[in-house]
Length: 561
Image 1 (spheres, one colour):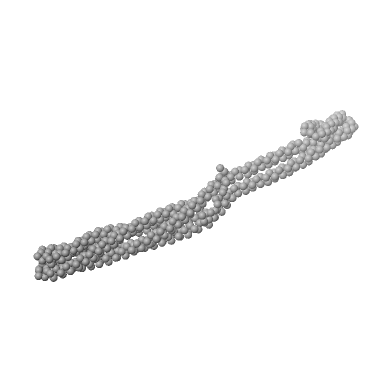
Image 2: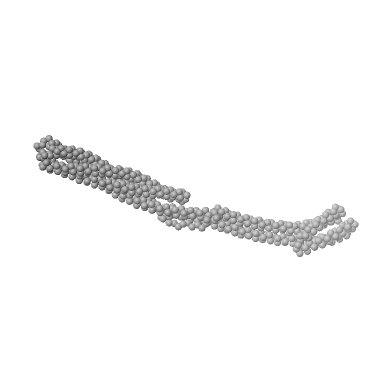
């Protein structure tokens, strides 16, 4: 896999290789030019140097010979021989390096004229030694011709060498220009290749980065509908594009999920509001029913007090009948009337107790239903709390992904933090609602227990009142039979006294039970009022939750998915 570092390094290495190749080629061309100039120096210039040296040595030979011919000094002969030897050596070197036909012809003329000159010079020296001055002059004239011919040939050779040197210089100059042109072309080629490599590497890096930057800008604006960034390379930038596309898709799913969750929270809050309102209405009905029960219990207590007073009066009348037998008829009539009134009162008490029992049963059912509603509300609150917890986790994950995105993800990190705060507020509100529901459920359970106890006490009171009704009916029957059973009046009076005492005890029990029922009804009424207040608090909390859900939806609506 070609990473960005490898691409950049490869581009630099390729440019470096081209520069090295160009440097090697330049070095070789300069070396070839240097070799050519060295060859020019070693051959053509060497030829010129040897030719000029030959001419100088030949001239020195002539000077030494003339000096000997005039002075006869033997040292001049020695100098002549030394210069002759040097000129022979230069001639031999020229014979090895002169390769042109013209040069060879000039060299042959030089050799021939040199040999002629030296042969005549030797004859001249012999004539000098023989002191034959006339022959010396003739030889000197003849030697001068050969000398001038040899010098002319050497001059021609020098000129030929100069021509060759000029030609070689032109060739070397042309080669240098060609090498310079070629080096310029190579430099331009290397520069173009380096520029091409730089542009290729730069575009391969900058183009996908521009794509990612453009998509990131769209994300920063809240547009999550942007197409995925397509990068064909598998380097770090390609991996960055894949990670960016994955982040965008996860963000899109997160926003959709938050939208769905916020809608669910809003719907649940509306349902909770409706349920709390319904529960409030039910609690209001319960409170009203309990108030009616309390009023009925108060009326029952008053009726029971009246019945107790009547029974006590009846007992006093029976005692008076027992004490005053002469007034049995009157007292019997009064007792019959009182018994009828007591029967009616007992029937009313029985009917009232049945009404109380029915009301208490209805209240118990309503309170039990209220407990079930409270449990349902608790489940809804648990669901809201779970949704808020999931929203908090999703917001935390979104914040982590934004942190990984760096600067591009800062704007979304702020949104994710706001979502997390809203989720925490929703969760806190759900906890408060759950605590309220728990308190309501506890109060409801207490109310149910109190209702059950009230129901049992009402049943007991009904049984006692029924017993009292039976006693009153028996008293009425006995009083009716008093007229025909005067003989048995004493026994009847004793039975009536005993029955009146039982009636007094029963009525007192009924009075006590009525007081307990009235107290319990007041307690249930207070509990119903507290439950109504709790339902109102639940409704207020559900409205706040609905408002939070709407704010969450408004925040999420900024993103286009």
